[in-house]
Length: 268
Image 1 (spheres, rainbow, N blue to C red):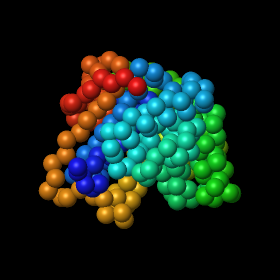
Image 2 (image 1 turned 90 degrees about the vertical axis):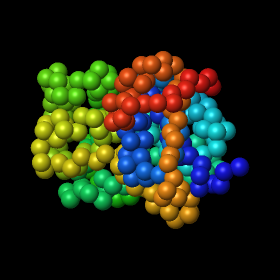
Image 3 (image 1 turned 120 degrees about the vertical axis):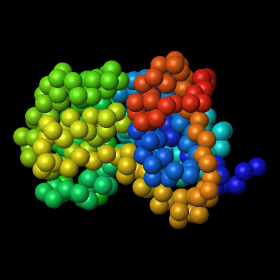
C-alpha cells in the first residue's frame, strides 16, 4: 500500500481543456503523479443544466476517489461553478478548483476594482465568479461575457487565426468599454489564446490564468500537509477519458505541451 505522499493528484475536466491545469501542475510540481480524467463522451458541459453537470461531477469524483488520490483539482470552470460543494461533501481528500483560485488572484491583482470575466454560458450564467469575487472584496465591479465560440476554435487549433481574432474583438469590446484592468480566463481552453487575447486587450489589462494559480495552491497545500512526493521520484501520469481516446491524444498534446501517453478508455 503506497503512502499518502506517493498517491497521485486527481485532476478532472469535461474534456481536454483541463490539460492546461495538468500542465501547470506538472511544471510547478514536477515530481508529482497526475491522474487526469476527461469526460470526452459528454463534453461540452457549458450548455448543460446545473443538475446534469452535478450528476456528472458526482460520477467522476467517485471514480477518482476509487483510484486513490491525495488531492482533487476541479479543472473545469463549469463544474466548479455549479458542483464544487457536492464534490467537497463527497471527498475525504482536499479539493481545489480553478474558479476559486482565479478569483482570489484577480482580487489581489486589480488596481481599479474593475474585473472582467470570460467563460462558457453555464459558467457566466451561474454568476459564480461574481459571488467568489464579492466574497473576497464586496466593492469590486464585475463584468462578465460568455464566449462560447472560443472552445471550438481552440480545439481546431486556430490559436492565431484571423477568424479567432475577429471573434475575440467582438466578445471583448464591451468589457474593454467598462475599463477593466483585470481579465479572468474563466475556461481552461482560454490559456491557449493568451498571446492573441493580450494583443486584443492591450498592456493595461492583466490576464488571470487560473491554471497557474491553482497549481500554486496545490503546491502550498501539499507542502503544508507534508504530502509532497520525494524530489528523486520519477512520476508516471495516467489519462482517463470516456470516449475517443485517439482524438484526445491528438488535441490533448497541444494543451499539455507534450505527447500524451497512457490514455485509457473508461466507463462510468
